[in-house]
Length: 428
Ligand code: NAP
Ligand code: HSE
Image (cartoon, rainbow, N blue to C red; front, side):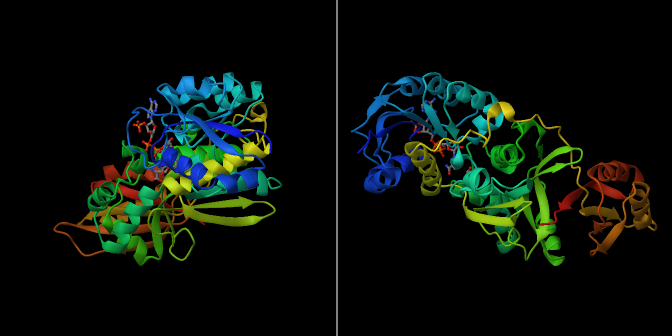
């Protein structure tokens, strides 16, 4: 048998311990599939004596992930520490400089530094693989870079943060408020150490930026992703959306338009009968659209020790087999800088506002919309709450620019209480 592929694993938390477990329990299967053994030479984490549920005595220990990355007995750095900078970036750069490939689950690192790291890898004749960074166990990077490589991609979209989908579906199914569903997710350990990464759409935005780069052959540009989290969604929105045949999802959409690359991660209404509308709990779904294939839908666990380690090992086996894909599916120097287009594709919107109970109030709202060039498709007023009533409006297709103009003008009407909620209705 040929020489083993020797791993250095930096990070032994949820994902790292899952990777160690697969290497230990599936040694024969991995060797048979890869054509050579896959072994672990050394590991690193912050605390040496923690019980991680897997035996680590057979491996060398490094306190410093950079030292691990530089070891002569490590062929591949498996970076599972997390964070866009700090030790994850330093160890990745050290591994590439030392002529080693890198496998990582770190979407934050690649969403921010992906282009520079991909160029550094190529300058060294090395590769960075990151299947686990997007939608956990779903092999979406492989689908885009291999199975769909013959397509010009037209749109990629998906629900890529399981925590947000869990919160929204608990509000929907159990009638919980946002705060109650958030607390439940927290109790189950779903939230990131900084919950804003989840509920603010940042984690999912990182994933969307990575998918967009591969799909459209562009330099990864997380700064151009329009981000809006789920914190403003109320149980009223969920109920009223359901009443009209929709579900609310934190949906990422990337699409190349005549004005540039549009990347959005925001709450959207999707038809309740669509695959995205039916997605429950912490599960992820990615929808890929290509000019030849049409639409394909991938669904599965977006997080967790086993699913994420599964994706890491898919990349490791590719490297053991000698399959060496450029980081973003084509040489980094050939990736174009995309012009960012803000919400270029028009769509219908759902609006919820609290309207004071005065003669002519609805007429004033309708006038503002008309002056912004927005046509009303449907309108509903619910029962009065003291001196005001909730009003729902579904518009015909309009641009985000026109909608923002109307939203700004509502304040001056004197009949709209507080800030209206505006949610895009996505054609999926
Ligand atoms: P985690 O459970 O918090 O584990 C992080 C590990 O990194 C721990 O073992 C920690 O050491 C180690 N570490 C942190 N800072 C370090 C440092 N300065 N030097 C050395 N080691 C350090 O995180 P995780 O959930 O496994 O996530 C790892 C990566 O996978 C992240 O990039 C995350 O975004 C990504 N990811 C996670 C999931 C998931 O389901 N968890 C899914 C997809 C992607 P100690 O244990 O000693 O503290
Ligand atoms: N916080 C992420 C989620 C973990 O909820 O999907 C996986 O990236």
